[in-house]
Amino acid sequence: MTTLEFKNVTKIYNVRGAGQLKALDDVSFTLNSHQTIGLVGQSGSGKSTIAKILTQLETPTRGEILLDGVPIPRSGKGLRRYRQQLRMVFQDPFASLNPYHSIRHHIERPLRLDDVVPRNEVDDEVRRLLLRVRLDADAVIDRRPHELSGGQRQRVAIARALASRPAILVADEPVSMLDVSIRLGVLGLLADLQREEGLGVLYITHDLATARHFSDEIMVLNQGRVVEQGPADDVILNPRDPYTRELRAASPDPEKHFRELSARTSGGAQ
Amino acid sequence: MTDSLLSVRDFSVVYDVDPPVRAVKDVTLDIKRGEIVGLAGESGCGKTTLAYGVQRLLRPPAVITGGDVVFHDKSGDDVDINSLGVEEMRRFRWDKVSMVFQGAMNALNPVATIGSQLEDVFLVHRPEMSRVERRNAVVELLEIVKVGGQRLRSYPHELSGGMRQRVMIAMALALRPQLMVMDEPTTALDVLVQREILRQISQLRHEFGFSVIFITHDLPLLLEISDRIAIMREGEIVELAPAERIWNDPQHEYTRKLLASFPRLTGEKGVVAR
Image (cartoon, rainbow over all chains, first blue to last red; front, side, top):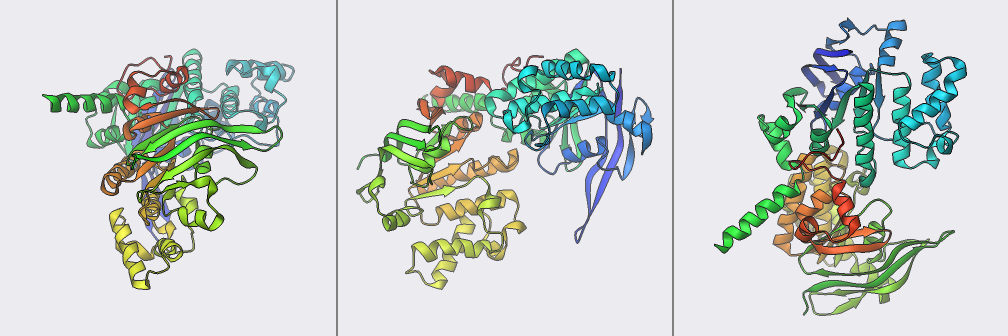
């Protein structure tokens, strides 16, 4: 069991000519392995700042991140171990893979850097990971990213994230760049992996519908503050915070649309 | 006068590459006056090629290989778009049919004020207008789309994404066209801004009575905004029906598959296996 604690984190950016911007304001949450938290909010709400702080691309202005109760070391082996424990899947599978390198290279690197398996087992492990994300290992292993479809590339990115056997996965809009008919497939894969590997997943998205179906809990962020958090169905079906209600009302919901439409027309006929 | 605004008959487009790609195959579609028709489908299904093709906006290697596009002008004239000469076509575009492009960021000139870009429309298409008339028309347009006339001298980077998209809508509205083609007009925007823009499009449609071809892959959104929806796959319209029928009683297997690709916000769970 691994526990990631985001504790009273405030992040202030100094914006040239515009003073200070509070991107995160005293945000706290706990993510355990075997658990998926959906992080929703509109553009600029601070979702990506949380991802950047978790991956140590930014340091918090105040507050701290604890992994199993231990603050993240600033450098050295400890930081390396933290990064091995927490991996990221990015939004754009066209940008997150290196066009010069083969798929094999992408997945081998974390295996070698973190000494996950003995050297002579690296090739088998690469194939195992590709199978794990339901790719035909023989067909893709020596290819380069441009030879694969968007969905295949995102599967490669997921395999790469899993290579170091992390406890926590941060997925920032992992399917929004993919074609609609394959989105559910990739989300379903992530859900299966989450369950089977006991991963803790932070699913960052602006899509309330997938957040509801994919997450155990949902956390709503508005202007750097957590305005609501709770079991996914409660937050989406019975939102308490006005901002969550606003987000829900703005999200396309054909079910509600046609229900209201038929209520209006039958009401008019009476 | 029929209530049909645009009649597309057996329209085909081929990308003349090796091997040739039949991007649009014998599409027949009627757009009625004042209606919003949604074109839905995945990337590469030909929805954008179709919408650009009917305005002859495609460049080589795209070739229109067959079909007719007739525009039924409100004056009563029928315009065969394929037979228009270069100059006639130039006058036809934007005057009768305008477009709202996907990336407002890229569609606006970053080094010109939005006022001057809107004025260009009148300068080209309404050369008889005076400077003052042009300026007044631009202010009026910015007021209509609720950006505000005082933003005339703003540069695109000084506006938010939603405001820029409104400027694009103002530009498309400038000559009071009878048809607007909107290509993923809200895809890059977040849900709250998207909702405002959609409301505005519906409202302007009621006010000015133009028809809309609304292109997007976002079927739930399309179901809410469209009168009728055409589902495209591999260059063909596989189903064309009122939005409510697409939702309640989809006929084609692919329509059902596409509908199933979107988890329901408030409906049953179980789409994502958990």
